[in-house]
Amino acid sequence: MEGITITKKIDIRGLVCPYTFVKAKLAMEVMEVGEVLEILLDYEEASRSIPKSMEDHGQRVLKVEKVNDTDWLLLIRKEKE
Amino acid sequence: MEFTEDQVQRYSRHIILPEVGGKGQMKLLNAKVFIVGAGGLGCPVGYYLAAAGVGTIGLVDNDTVELSNLQRQIAHSTKTLGMLKVDSAKATFEALNPDVTVVGIKERISKDTIMDLIRDYDVVVDGSDNFPTRYLVNDACVLAKKPLVSGAILKFEGQVTTVLPGEGHCYRCLFEEMPPPGLVPSCQEAGVIGAITGVVGSLQAMEVVKLILGKGEVLKNTLLIYDALKTVFRRVKIPKNPDCPVCGANPTITELGDYEADYCRM
Image (tube, rainbow over all chains, first blue to last red; front, side, top):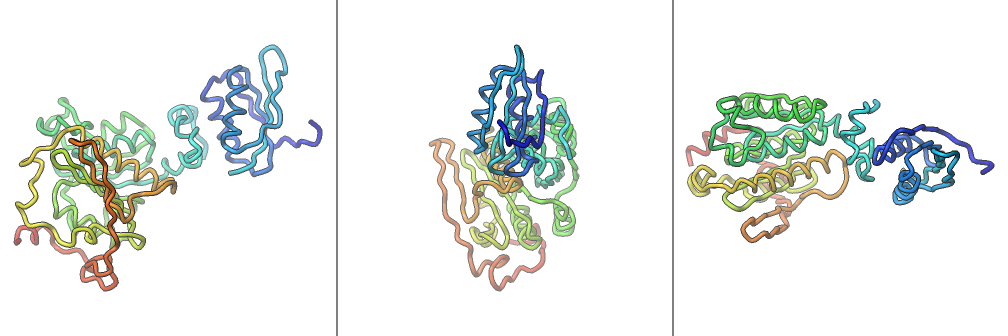
């Protein structure tokens, strides 16, 4: 994923749904359209639900990657306010 | 301003909604809503607005809690019998949500106090149980250009309408003058089914929340009538009356009169 500039990173390991999405959404709200949020999480369900919810809200999922035995890394680009 | 961890949890179901989000929740926390009456309607309106995190709730009422109130006035309880309704409701709402400050005002609202009382608030809610107060609140909101969410209940019927001064109708466009005393019975005379206060009060709270968020459509130029026996909601169009005595082009009501005395003289 070359050429992607990450604007903001949040580490929500230890959180479960729905707070995983709540935290991701709050982080996204204060960003500008076009900026990219990196989310590090360890709650498996959220690795599926956050991308789905973000897309439902009109945002763009750039990457969903399992980075080790417990953690996932998501990259979401803000497409709309 | 950032949310505390407790606030993120408390308001999580709001924040998830696209129409609310963190920004909308912050609007609710910064909002000030004034409620006339801490009775059948004021209880559910205040209860839901407190739960929603409306930061400041003004509440005016002159009464104390009586046993006959408790079949419908859910902010009060057997333990608060005899207490001022504003104190009883304040304790209930602040226990539900410590983010909320309830400003209780123990008085019967009048033409001499209403303009000062509503000045610092964003939205006014009418949950009063009598015509002089209903007309006083309408006229004051039109003159002060405050949005007003008006509700009324009797027996098995309820009504809700939202007045946006300068944009839509007002209560006098609908009913120009107060009905003569005795024509419309009071809850005391005619009775009221308890749960209807929850339906109508919740509709009012919902109107207030939409006004604060700036989302959706409110009951502008519309009267919503609820028939609880038939379980029917009807929306009635209420056009703005160009000759309305308070919000028309050439208003005859330009300051507040003595509604109580007018009513008694009828």
